[in-house]
Length: 532
Image 1 (spheres, rainbow, N blue to C red):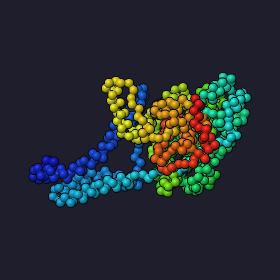
Image 2 (tube, rainbow, N blue to C red):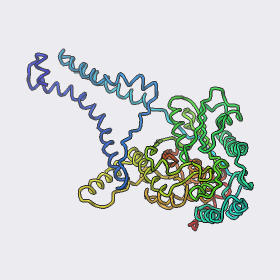
Image 3 (cartoon, rainbow, N blue to C red):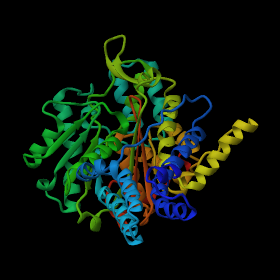
Image 4 (cartoon, rainbow, N blue to C red):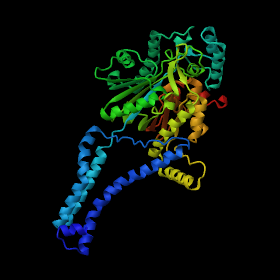
């Protein structure tokens, strides 16, 4: 300040200092106030990541989610904002030199605040809603009791007695019931796994849920602007999106995306993809279809690590309608709050933990390594750490920080695991097996009621890959547990290895779902307490 007064040939006196500090301090203080939340957030981010990660976990990268500004506001406001603070500071200095009246300083401060508020509101993205969703209920003639499965496998000369005994053991310990279903192609002896049967299976699992969703939402196929289909193991030409577009005579300018090879987290990944597209394309509807074609993934060999797929995966598919239209807030069930994708394919151990390859006899199958659970745990910790620092309240971050500091200073064992139930009311977890569900629930300090949707979905429908998260949400709705204002966390893990999270907030009361949907005829039987 003394240097400024000397350069401007101003008398150095207490009144000059008082006046300068009084008029300049808002401009010096506002940038610090703007950056303070960011600095605090990054500090708590590190604490949360260390608290959730175990002592053997490798350091996690400090990934920062991208700013979700609209293209127009980002283009108009990003460059001027870089020069806003220097410009206003120089202008204020000029007003001081000219000894202008306080009114001019007040007007300049008002201009600065107005610019800040304008940028905040213009850069705020429009909300994205989950209008509704539909899940396929497999027909009863596709049901495969354990005895039928084992009998058919025994009548086929491919499997030896050791493999038959292994599959029988997996079936009875998997947590599935006798009501799970396989596509008609796998009911034949031997199973029909050629291309034509796979196309028939696609039509069987996708068309009914699209019809149901369009009827429930009163949306025409011509109103769909974006179409995304995920199916990991079957990628025909023409693509699955082309198959659906041809069936429903959709528009010629529809933006279609066919996602394959993304594993069991693909539904959450495609919701994130749809969100990014809807940020760009305003006033649009996005249809997301999630399924897995089982006839192409059937393994006809005797390697135990590849036989697990035959025993665990079952029929299922889901259709989701997302929209950023203003009218959607009146009819939608949920608002999309947060999506997060984390990747661990850079780690060889994670990359090869679940891998599609040929066995020694040249038969194709998916190998699941023994250390898969450990690798999944690392992927979950990476994802949960980043998500926790964004959604957890300050109190939980504080106790995580205290726990980490205490562990470093006094060498105490264990760290405080944050309570996600302070912000999340419902959980949809990967249901690839009962041990996986219970381990994830234990790590997140969830109760039996919290992991119930995953256990019951596994029991009634088996493991339907990426679409199982929507069956869990349908279970919660059928039980009428989701109330307005509740948040639902969908957590998916897929090969690669990757972990994806989606958080929804319920925006209206959801009632009467027990009368329709995949759980309509059996929801009164659940939960099954003695399934363990």
